[in-house]
Length: 241
Image 1 (tube, rainbow, N blue to C red):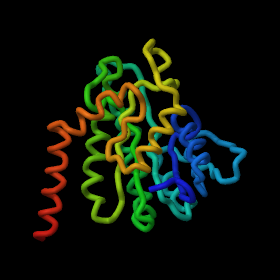
Image 2 (tube, rainbow, N blue to C red):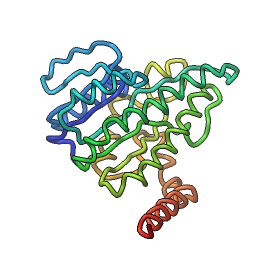
Image 3 (cartoon, one colour):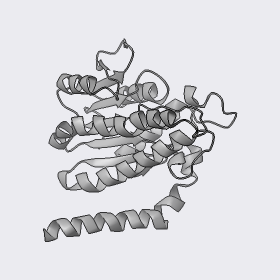
Image 4 (cartoon, one colour):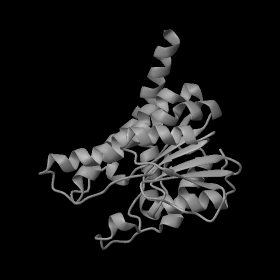
């Protein structure tokens, strides 16, 4: 997929990676960029159409679907990251509501449009899906679950022509990582890496230097091999049926 002349929807588009994704889509010639945010958004480029979109609100999701004429690429970027120690179940449920079920709900709602266009889904995740960061364990758990969701959707939707990309980011210089004194990639460079990965057809996208350092070991490792084998098993069962 190329971004030029395509319709793109970005959730969590008002700041950080989401804001950078909107600008990068415009630079790459997208014909329409739907910017999903919880707060009102104004943009100077006429190709940008703001959408009131809280990914935990079913009514807002449905209203957004009704406002989108066509869609080629859905980027599930909206996310939540809070410091916790797993002592509060409510904190874990809050992370799952946004990072897992929000991604699931938006994807299911827009799937008919994506199937019609033979489009793509990119879920913005984190390398904490591979190994939990104990400073933000609820976030790590939710991203691991969303990664499994992405792998499952990838296999289930392949027959309908919809591709699913998992974006595994390292630390990015956003509000979410403000309290971490570590090297961070810029949101702009990560946005470029995400679109490069989509355009290159990469199933798992490692868009920054830290995450890119583990890309080869992941792609050639036992876990990725098992994912491919499981997907092939699904195809075999489908053919037999």
